[in-house]
Amino acid sequence: MTTLVLPSTSAGIQQAAELILDHQPVAFPTETVYGLGAGVFDLEGIARIYQLKGRPSDNPLIVHICSVEQVALLARDIPDSFYSLASTFFPGPLTVILPKQPAVPDQVTAGQNTVAIRMPAHQIALDLIKAVGQPLVAPSANVSGRPSPTTPAHVLDDLDTKVAAVIDGSATEYGIESTVIDLTQDPPVILRPGTISASELEAVLESPVRLTTDLDTEVTLAPGMKYRHYAPEARIQLFYTPQEILNSHLPTTTTLVLSDTPAPELTSAGYIAHSLHPTSLFAEFRQADKDGFQTIAVLVTPETLQNLGLMNRLQKAATGS
Ligand code: TXA
Ligand code: MG
Image 1 (cartoon, rainbow, N blue to C red):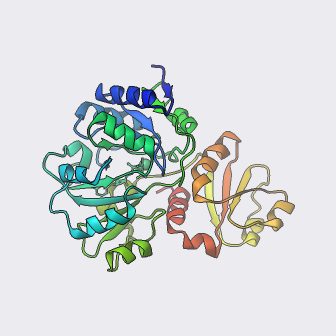
Image 2 (cartoon, helix red, strand yellow):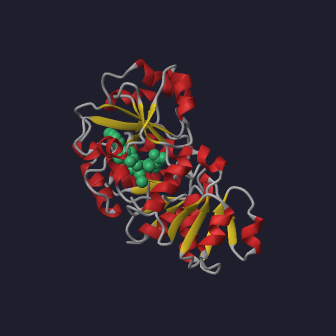
């Protein structure tokens, strides 16, 4: 099949909605990364999503809504804390886990009794959900295990000729996926760190939240976190000082350095260094493969360590877990 690249006009969005209503998943931009969308009640479209991505069937999908009222379709026993978070962070890069309504298909939640919900802060995404007339399930629009796509070109790299269409919304704003918080646990648990931090969530909830640091707990709670993630073909290695990189004797011709501060010791030693930032991380991963780099040496500074969303992606890409 020829993959259509649709313009972000109302006609383009309408055409995308018609494809989705015809059970054909369409890739669309959000403020985080591109998603691959199907109707939340469309079992045929959902099966295609798993097939297109090569996604394990025990990894549940996030449901995207265009109004807070749609939550009632999807979740039950909704706590007040949900409405506090929604009034501050929706639309935005936050996904909330709630007990699910029986009507939500098991294929969406991978058989769990909870459902993940978010309202993207992107007009194309909101208009598309509205045009389809039901919430959209949307995992990141990459082949499972590859870095999430932040441009239409990345979507085509992975899914050209396989997916019916991608809506061209140019590059995404944040570059890493939404923060996932589980409100069915007490205290609430952050299953996946993102742009919205634990302290921002605590300030709104007026109570502490827990971060999953115990990998075993994480595996049970967020099935997706146990799979190899975000990884390019190049090997990713984390270093904590420029000297460590110099000592590694990695070849300068096949090693790309990523650093959030200038590293003159490394560039004068012949290394190519690009800036390390969440908005460009996945694009750098993909470009490094195209440019033939074999290793990506990440210089982790005290500042990098502060950004838990970024560190989470780096660690997963580095360990291959
Ligand atoms: O920013 C984002 O969240 C992007 C855009 C497209 O919205 N979506 C995204 O979806 O990252 P995906 O499928 O790549 O990641 C969803 C994560 C997975 O780790 C999955 O296991 C977890 O959310 N998840 C989904 N439903 C869950 C549930 N009921 N309980 C626990 N974790 C859940
Ligand atoms: Mg993903």
